[in-house]
Length: 308
Ligand SMILES: Nc1nc2c(ncn2[C@@H]2O[C@H](COP(=O)(O)OP(=O)(O)OP(=O)(O)O)[C@@H](O)[C@H]2O)c(=O)[nH]1
Image (cartoon, rainbow, N blue to C red):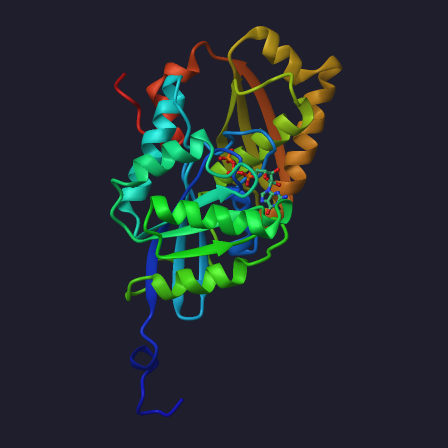
């Protein structure tokens, strides 16, 4: 580049927020991972695993795209579920644009219809992303894209398979081009602004699901209580797993502590990979009654506490 042409003038940077909206299990977390190219949020076969807004940050060309990975939007029953839903929708209103995800196989089912109805009030530019195209025949995809576009005026429609990365590059480029001009909001090498403590807690939570399958559905939460950098370059992390009943505590501990040991070993390995230093992980299991009604737990998860 010639000296008399500063880079900013030749290529003004772009930066903006993209809210991902979709029914549970549509593949939002997988898509964030595919767009970012590194693991930032948890992928699970079980629905509703994303409790807080975790952002992935993508740099594409001269644009920084901040992805707001919204929790599954569904009919809220419990108080915690209502908090997730309202956080998700406020994310949509705050963003520069909205990516609406549809599961190619599920199509415009009841859940998708409910989301589309709510989307009518969201004025931001919208992309339609039909995911899991590997599972459905082409003609069906085209018909689905057409029907969805008759309901909502999408700016563009993308067909992707987030799991294999098919179509993801096109989507990333289009998102970059759609971002408003402006300076980067995050350092260029940052992939996620989720604090490491929170990420570490999410990793342990994922390992609990992995190790316990159906035994302990959605009644546990994990908090990182302490994070100490040691002089020898390792980090000492203490986490508490909160459950609702003593019977659940016993399940998490397992016979002779076997289950908690396995959870700890899995989590420690993955956290160490992410922080790039040796990790000593200490897990505690505590019973807390009705944590689902405790405002403090919501704040720690980055959610607003719903009034009713
Ligand atoms: N076949 C196929 N499966 C996919 C694809 N993308 C995601 N999945 C699977 O769909 C399931 C749900 O994916 P997630 O990324 O956890 O879904 P989510 O929308 O983030 O779910 P919540 O966090 O619960 O809202 C996982 O088993 C993924 O492996 C895809 O392109 N093709």
